[in-house]
Each structure stands twice: as C-alpha cells, then as structure tokens.
Length: 156
Image (cartoon, rainbow, N blue to C red; front, side, top):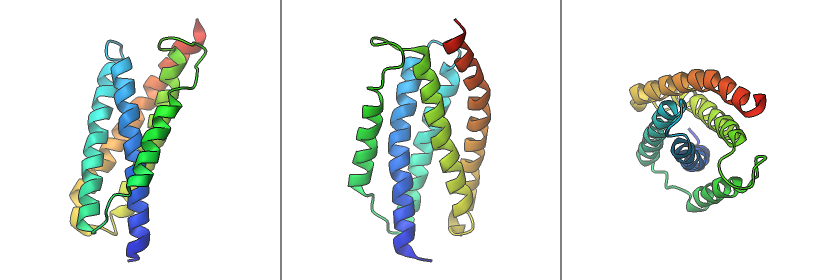
C-alpha cells in the first residue's frame, strides 16, 4: 500500500469531515424546532462518529492530521454562510435546501470512502461497515426530506 497516498486520502476526508461537522451543527441548530430537527440531530452525531472513526484510522496508519487542509475546510464552511439565499437577514428556507445539498454531497463522499477502505484496512471492517450503514440511512432520509424542503422553499 502506498502510505503517502493513503495519508493524503485520509487527510482529504478529514478536511471534508471538518467542514461537514460544522455544516451539520449549523443545520441542526437552525432547524431544531422543525420537522427536520431529529434527522439533522442524528446526522450531526453520525458525522461526529465518522470523524472519530477517521481519526482512529489515521492513528492506526501513523497519519497526522494536515492542519492546513482542515483549517481551510473550516474557513470554507464559514465563508459559505455568507451566501445570501434570497434573504439578507435571518434563516431562509433556501438555506435549508443548500445545507441539505451540502450534507448529501459530504455523506455520499464518506460513504464511498468507507466502502473503498474496507478491503484495504481489514482490521477495521466492523467499524467501516457500521459507518457505511449510517451513511446509507442518512442519504435515504435526507433525500426524502430534501424534497419537502425544496417544496417549502419555492412553493409559497
């Protein structure tokens, strides 16, 4: 196995998860008292679990987190909040749709990561399978609630 490329691959996923956990936390907070709240609460918790799993995988393979990549991902997520979604002040229903789109992309990337790593990191098979199952469940539920969010955002 090419350890340098594995380190880069894991660090790229670490950066994605850094942004993803921030995005999930923001979406969870903004939607706490809505029909979307329970799913977003679980997704935020699941992404924290994924982040812990990734750190375990990195430790097991002697990979140190790339602070620059993670910091840039964190800043990028914060800058993404500046995009106006048809409303200058407050939370727009379009913001929810954009958050769902971002979470879907992040979770789909992670799902592919867990599947790709299974044959390579055999010591963590159970953890990778559990992460894959979490991702699949979250993608399914996000997909159906996303339709409702789009309808709410553009129908009125």
